[in-house]
Image 1 (spheres, rainbow, N blue to C red):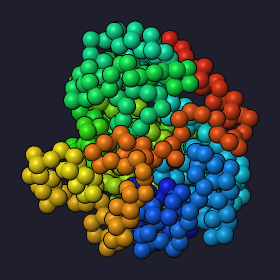
Image 2: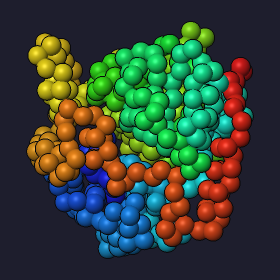
Image 3: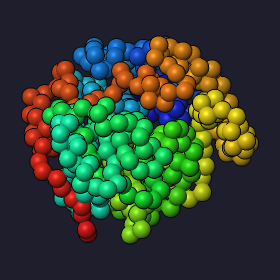
Length: 410
């Protein structure tokens, strides 16, 4: 099968390319700049540069259409939030290729943390009480409800812009530095003790076809994972099935949970790929996306992988105290690229970092923003979207403005 992986800059895009090629598929890649690491894998049949999804959407969609038409691409697998822009313009690509992502209305409902919280409460999925704040005054009133609180923007990702008075991130962001609005609200919840439990799944028509549950024992700035270990998928799989089944969802879904004393408590959804891809075997990922089997393929507990380049970056950030831990992990834990004999993406990773003017290896948030800002979606209308999707977006804005909700007790 001929497959195009978009946003080839991401570590999991590089991994997708390798695993799809290993499984016998003809793989192509694209991104908005020429030094995107994944675009230089030796396993590719071709790579392309497109317009920027966020600021030049119509041209971006046209570029993807041209790539698919010229190369007879059968499936496009988005690696990040460019999938939102493709989903909102799906009608322009019908008859040309298939986009492996959900309907725009579902993507929007899952990605907006306020409407997602309402959905999981409706479905009886355990979650913490949640208050939506749409002004500075509402934010202050919300955090006063909880002796220990945790707050984040409705449109956020990568563990950045977190406001809390508990744990290692306490004081990382001050209340006066946060400005919620009607269009960009913040969610406030009680701080829940327990380790983070993440999942990544592929789905077809609401059925899970591949599933990985994992933790991130090594993190950058106590937020973004750079080392990963799979855990028992049994607790999270039924929850993913409940949510995806309700939506009849096709595409990629990723969830974050807290392992609370009474079980998993869901925190948020990323309706796209995340680092859980790295823990899947080539067969599990390929079958999950392109050749679904009767039973979901699950990653067993105990698999480990890390991003060596990020581990090095963390060592430079934290100084000499980090060196022994870093050397141990480099010796004991497999890098995501180990065994692929595909060195160029590692070289181009350095060039990609230099490509971004706002780069700072010591500043996690600025690094993440520089790397992904042009392929993110933060709730704004999308050029070329249908009137129906525009109406859905407006409706979801109204839904998110309702009073506090949760928690679910089922």
